[in-house]
Length: 504
Ligand code: ADP
Ligand code: MG
Image (tube, rainbow, N blue to C red; front, side, top):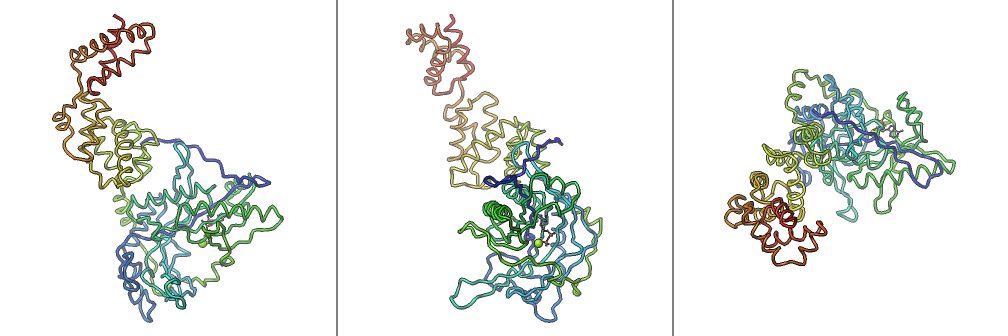
């Protein structure tokens, strides 16, 4: 594996402030576990189902119902933990977090406060090639999602949909290691990529399957270093938590406006109050939702309906053995095995379908050439074609590989190859047969090229005279020969012959 070295990005400093304020950000990401059934019931997790059709009695908080842990959810949390290089806790336990909400029929959420299933881990957050930051994960715990209150369907009534109630969430809590809005977005994006590789969360933010609570504070330059040395939070500023963000763009905007709000308060001599806030994208501001509650407000206590969760190391090892190659490792391998730049390798490993496609094309071929064709030609063409996903690509890896083989065997030039690609894209077919049938083969026969060169030279004596004085003008002859041969002459042979004839 390739050992990449990274630079650490500078913390974001807010422009326009009187002092050098830096940002400190920690995220609590809620990722819906990809499973068929809920955390403690057999009800379906299917998105978009008829309201209140996926509700078991236990989800509806019916008296006397008992939750039963869904092993698949536990396995997915362990898998996610392993993917984030985190400690797996063989002993974990569920607690009740008590609060009232119309879409929480139990009157409590079953969560894991004291003994989460996953402990400390880390994520490499890529900013740009050669620049990355390690964001530490504090913990991941399993918990139930709540239902949904619907306020906009009727002027006088609110409705409740319990389909989501009891669906398993992983709450992934980061350390406050994120230093700017772009980094926060890159962090969520990297988490999503890893979970998609693992198949543990589909990462669909629009559907609310991935959402984040964003904690923001400001501090003066130097304070964060003190926190890092001591892990003492008192060196950091008071944080505000912006709830339930489900778009990367809004996360960045919210952090920016929240930081500016806090700076304005502190620079005017005031103090930031710890609280929960909401971001309003229309107004471009955050506003207070409630003052920060403490754990004791929820009267957390061990859930008496559930035994502590004890899992075996051998089971964890089995899951570990089944993990796929993850994005960082895949990227390093693509750089090492195929000689790709970090940028190209990142593009090709963005998701597993891209990566698998590329690997089939590159197999036994020049990796860089394959990367160029996949990224520039194929991705470019798919984008123009209404952003078609690669899974619907009309050009298969075998066909694209065939085009590349024709280039490397000098049968066609890179330029003609683009025409062949377009034919394969729109009409299909075997590239070698297309080239043969349509007479697109490159002319490498020097006799034929020589004849064309001679003809152009004979027809343009004035140009010849000029070119003899200025060798740079030879390019014009090359262009004419290419034109005369319909672009099929081997450019290298043409260049050599033109130079020879003009010198003679
Ligand atoms: P709570 O459970 O009350 O929300 P936690 O201690 O679990 O509190 O922290 C929640 C999140 O807040 C974590 O992601 C943590 O990294 C982040 N955080 C803690 N202190 C700060 C701070 N001063 N600035 C920004 N984020 C912070
Ligand atoms: Mg919190």
